[in-house]
Image (cartoon, rainbow, N blue to C red; front, side):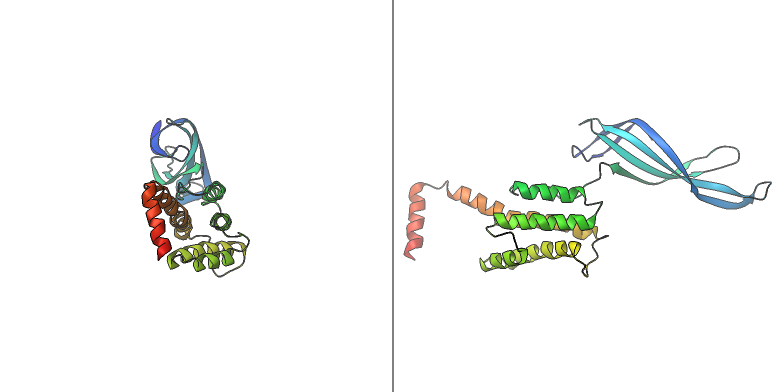
Length: 239
C-alpha cells in the first residue's frame, strides 16, 4: 500500500488524500488453504492464508483520523514466507461510513438531530435506524401542527387537510417500517439497505413538500407590492 491514498473522507465529506502514520497486520492462521503436497512428516503443505492489515490514516484536508481495513490472500512457500498477495476487500471501519442522505435545509433542528443519529447507526443497526427515523417523524408531526402523540392519527389529520396521497403514503411508509423495528412484525429489516436509504430520502421529501416549498412560496408572496396583495385579498373575499 502506498504511503498516500486517495479516498472519501467521512469526516469532512471530501474525496481527498490520506497519509498513513502507522499500520498493523494480523495473519489469520485458521483461514489457510492447502494443496496436495506433503512435507517429510506427511503433513499437508499450506499454499496461502488470509492476512488482514489495518491502516491508520489521517485526512490531509481536515486532519481527522480514519482506519482502513485491507484483507488479502497471501501465497506461502517453503523457500519464502510469502510470494504475492491478492486483495479480497478493503473498507473504512472508522469512522462508520454513513451513506444516508443529508438532512434538507428546512428540516427542524430537533428532527435533524434524530435524522443524523439514524444515519450514524445505518450500517450498525437497521432496527435502531428505522426506530429513530420513526421518532423523527413523530417530532416532525408536531411541526406540522399535530399532537405528536399518535402518529397514525396525526397522519389521518394531515390527510383531511387535503395533502396529496403520495405524501400520506410517504408518511405511512416511515411510520409502518419504524413500528416494525420496535414491535415483532412481518418485515425483515436487517439486510435491506435499499429500503434503509429510501427512508432518509422519504423524510427529506416530506419536509420539502410540507415545510420547505410552502415556506419559499410564502416568502416570495410577501415580496409582492402591497397594493397587489390587497387586490388579491379583495378578489378572494369577493368569491
